[in-house]
Length: 565
View 1 (cartoon, rainbow, N blue to C red):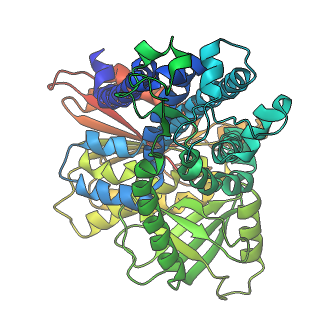
View 2 (cartoon, rainbow, N blue to C red):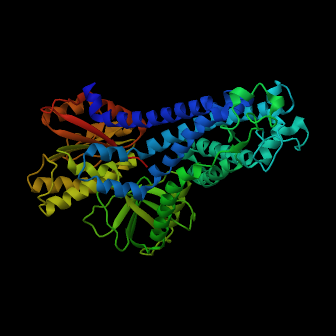
View 3 (cartoon, rainbow, N blue to C red):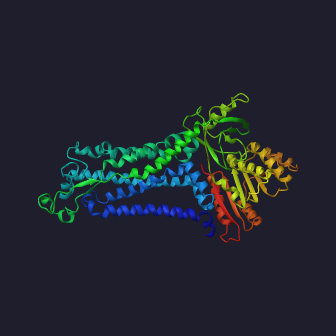
């Protein structure tokens, strides 16, 4: 239990607080509408459907306030910088922004479903009351005349069209009905296009459909303007407990005047206006960055269809492991794609390595391959840099860096920065040991990164710091001919795949063995484990960090960090 608390305790507290607020809002507003005297007559028409419709609406307002904030990357980077002097635990929460964004989205979807179903039933009950299917009180309430829109309770009026068509008519002709349909359709498209299979295989569909959130929020702001749900406004003059059984005396005796009703004031806009303004500022900053000039310093095609772009942008500053969003108008005016930078903060340019992984990257690589030698590429917009978990790599005594395939890119930045720090004898380097693991399916994937590792290997040996960086490369896929070639050349001083003195391992790492070794070599240390790779590997490493950590301050602790885009 103690091991789990080290890595997940604060997250559990934050989730408990968030869920607690959701439950409180639901319960509070449920009983507010289910017990409030001003809703006595409304409940007589709708029953518990009133509370079941309004309680989810309160939860929706709260979560719609939150949904945009985790994707305001500039805001998060600003907060991350402000938390530099705070605990790493707080900064780790900011790195889980997308997970929280998804969680809030699921809550919005659930509450929307409950709210929608309850209101569809309410429309049916309103209509049945209008038709006189229930008791005399329901009929009397539905027949109240519309005097300056202060008297009626049932929104389905006598002047409406044929009763058999009224429920559908109300849904598609009222402000609440039309906006409700629009909001629901937009939400369905947003959520379904956000599934992992769509995001990975058809990113453009996800990208464009996700921007339906603009329609969603616009509909949300106007949804309550219809004021369909009404409460009694003259409750002090007309006591419903006394008058509900004296329908014939309404308006004839002083103690039972005709009940009057009013719709509730729309409140959703008050919840979402702040986040919407913040998001608009976010988009303005992105537009300004897009308009800034970007020049190409170098364009390099590496093996395995990996494109390296070295770009120059005035005033650009970064930290290790950060990422940028790139936009190429020649491919798409609207699409922005995230890429981790492979340069170091000490360099005067920014670089990214882009693997062929979809239509956008394939088109970009194709354009770059057709350029004449030394020519400038197409216009490129750069938004960023944005902070990630890898920024904290030098805040730990010991760091374990785990990259899978092209997921090695943030660690290229880190390893380059280490080289510069040793070159300049930087006294601020807190980290005393780094373990680097790289998992690849094919040998060609190692080629573009091997030069950097060779440089690091040579530099560490010349400075007598050979023990500072321990790296292990794992080839997870190979054929028989490759295996025979490796066996034939195994006695060579350097690895036949990478040219490094450290030999390539075949198969997947034994993570229990690796963590046990790190713990044994670094007693009493705080170890940061950083991953840029698939979710399955993240789950394994998170469990290992919990398994091999100890709450005893005299023993080793492992903190898990994962890159999230």
